[in-house]
Image (cartoon, rainbow, N blue to C red; front, top):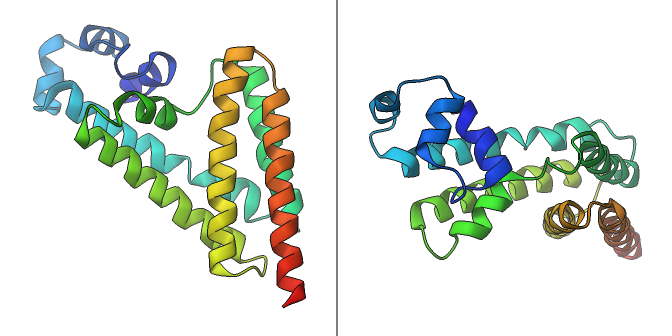
Length: 186
């Protein structure tokens, strides 16, 4: 699964062959079907679910311990910039990569990515809600953050520049400030 996750992250689902996966894993070819009788699709689904759910920890790392909502969001997007720079723009989100590839062609993988995105939205809604905004506002902020982060990864990787991530972070902060302001006006 680790080899599949790494290759899907780098090359996408359609750009990764089974032979590449077993070679990367230093495993005999037939062993893939022993552990994943459904072949590449089953492996892909399991990789998406496992690696996708690991990204929920980003809310625990950056949002939960933040002294306030704004600094948590700023740290979240600053980490995205640092990751892109440290990996020479190779690191992005494998879930978004696969989702873009399979959303209209592979229902089990589309469902797996949808389940991961739903889990992220639920986790973010909970973490952002602890800063005193309503559940609806926290959900809006989470969807904004995920949209902005995923879109920024695409642009940054293509342009080999972190400007889009900085803009995405600032836009998410603007939404957070508006939601905080709306809370105080009630």
